[in-house]
Length: 125
Image (cartoon, rainbow, N blue to C red; front, side):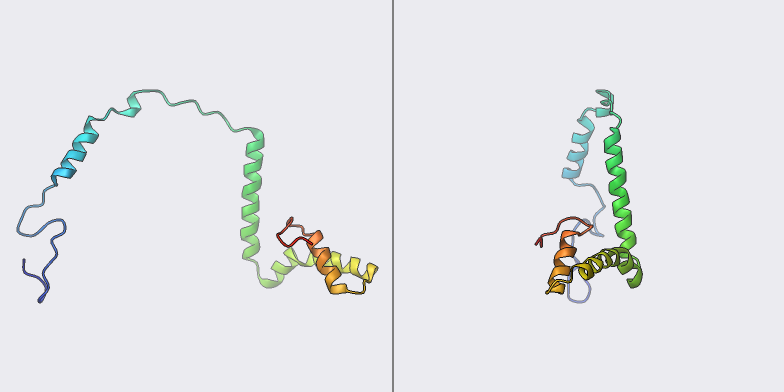
């Protein structure tokens, strides 16, 4: 068929010169679906057991954790640090002043890792 400029128009699904009809494959698939039994008429749906209280509690806690994490990520810099780092850092620095070790930076790093409120990490000392 004639195309745009020197390029022919691709004939993918239909052309202007022939009527638009479903292919034999489409007609066969439609017939196959029509012959299948309707599953909604066959068996009743199985009963769904209510969730256990522990499962509900775990799901609510997980939801709260996600919401809190999203909230922390959207905080301004100062509020983010005040919420996540400053409390444990102040505790560590208070302990550092009482201890007064010869290597204070290493001691504080070890304290922060051991007392990480977010749990253990891959960098345990």
